[in-house]
Length: 394
Image 1: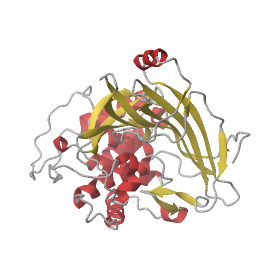
Image 2: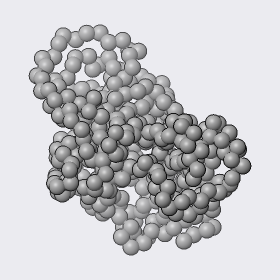
Image 3: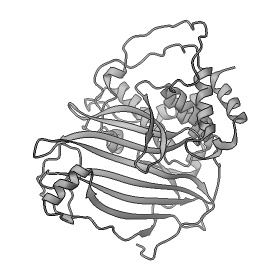
Image 4: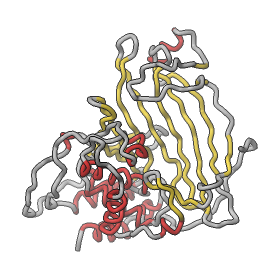
């Protein structure tokens, strides 16, 4: 019996905690079972060559799909240029308390997400985006936030909605707050057009404000109405999403065929490595918002579990204060400028809790400051509920 089937069978006999709550006994039990079950080393797959991977930034995947000239990387230190055939060794005991690997976490999430509801009136995603940037004088770091909900309906009698609210800006840390107070505690910030940003953020074209904006609803029209979502920037119909194959091998072939249509030649990008990176991002895109079947979402997790360059970092609190298992890899957004990417996953539900990108910048006084950009997922999935619409609508 293969491991995936063992994981499925174990999940069925675990307690009902696996149905939905973060950091439950069921999730811990499942991870412990997987650590114990996965005793023999798996045969090693051929990994990508250990040379620099020059790609578009993960934060702008649409540009990557279009072979933009910006760059990103899965850290070379995580890759190997060797091909080794490994004969499985006799089983050895692994303590149930051992920290789970990235593969084990992803396979546990795959088991759990298969239990998610498969239909409803609306496919709803609710997120909170948080991003950091320096103030115009580069004296301290600001953090901005925005909430957004998207309600997509398959039924023609139901309206598509997007609801958002700008939640304002504030100093990112207590140290930044002290520098902000020393600067007179401003409540708005205007940026010069020629401000140097090191590609960490775009220069705001309008003044930033500390106060939150009004919650606003917008009806989705035109190409958006009737769309089930997008993959790598391509809008997909409900029929196209239903046609996505659910078996891991077939899903991988489907994604690789789509990726193969991208024109990556002549852009300075190593084509094979670029395709491998886009495959990773496509799988993250499926689990973070595409209304595919639970089986497709589970297969996306299983593909991620097979990819090199993803490491487990243990339990982490996400930007909204929830606990989950953390997986990480690195991207290079320009030569020698790296961004650490963390995926915070709840193995008990298969829900991607957050995606966090972190790098550093130097302030005017020489202090090295962290710059983070995150998306926290409050809800991903089917619901029969209706959106709570604000008075202000576009």
